[in-house]
Length: 296
Length: 318
Image (cartoon, rainbow over the protein chains, first blue to last red):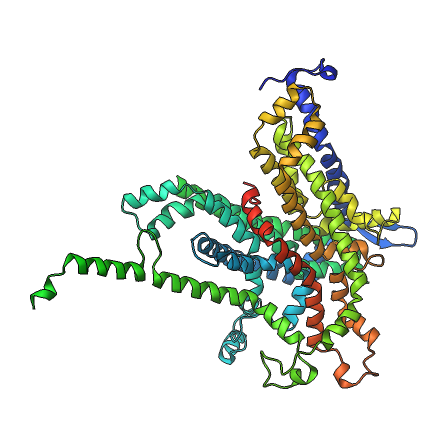
């Protein structure tokens, strides 16, 4: 591992020479992070504490402290409602996507004919899922499970449930295919992790008399705990950043609305970020706890 | 009656064989399992394809078929009029070209920059590397809504709003759409490559940048292909940022699709056209299909790359 010191770096030790080149390679990212993420983030934070009015020459700011936040949380009836719906829908969708993509990955990990065709189908949604396309498909009723959402007794029963139960169930019925469509990358992540599990462990377990069922719970699942965490985080992020997300659409509409404005939208986007972060933390703690318990 | 209680070894063997065929043995899963497996896969596959089939069938229905409740899955005739209308409404050649431009150019630039950063992170030890990883993760988590407004205002000040530079500049700085994932892909790739060639080149006096370009990059070509393909797809489908940054300047296909109704009524004003030329779901779905058609074509040509190299490059980022 010794590297000879080359001409222009004679004055530096090996270690600091390495650091200099390392920084040189990532410098462009650091500058970009400052320009396109850190500074705008701080600016948005600043806007959120102001009443922002767009004028012909630029923007004018009027400091109003936390009023944008209190308005979003206590005065605006829509925003909090949408936030709660978003949180519930995400918490409903994530386990479904996790379990579904794991099952599909387990299937695709078996040996059978025409595997390529099925893999192609299951991965197709990743390629075509975009906001306007989904919007059209949902509007034409192409994303609900055929025959399930229109069953009269079911709809009658659901209509009687309280709002917070009804909404997630309706969401499930009308967007079931949509939820499955978000499993494409997740299936691949699971699949690649499944293929990394050492086959000799299964053979050893089989010799000791373990059934396939037992080795799934005792070998496969524990080995996938880190992957599950990654998949869960990825799923939450994709669902939350998707442009058809109700909260995002509301924030966007408020940016240009007469009563809203940039300051108010900034405050709401920070609140949204906070909820997203909370969701991530909840999922992380939950899965991490499980992972620890399985190994310890 | 003795013959029943006594099974000859030959018989026993045949029984085992039959059992093997149906229930599986050491080498195959067995017929029953296979039937169940295929049925499940076909069922799930159908659920997956259902929206697409629905879209394709509906888009080929003539206005009469749409009104006829008897016609569900098989149109009485293949009617292409919807596509002709959708093609005009979407302004297809021009929006297609801009969609290709705004997805391909930033993707290539982004892949190049991400490979640079990934290489730096994989091959050099320096202080603050963990912090950089944390920040990369942060760029993945932070919703675009929290950073987009100041960016938009800055672009407006520089007159970049509505030009492709609004997408190229962040990509050049490794802050493009989903850059974090691509940096991690390259990081993984370079980490898994053996160092020996690079060390040999260093002994021969090659500079670090030269080593990167001449030795590391060529061996990371699969990572490049996968990054560029995914990036193209994600840039193509991204509408939130593109609407904010490009509105008024460049019109991409998904952007045009999102205001399909408005554009349709401009071309075919509601009061002036006859009932069969009114906007219906078949025309809308034709537009949707035209929108995803280029991606579908790309997917079917490159699908080997899509699925297999994801497994190889480990998009999981473990």
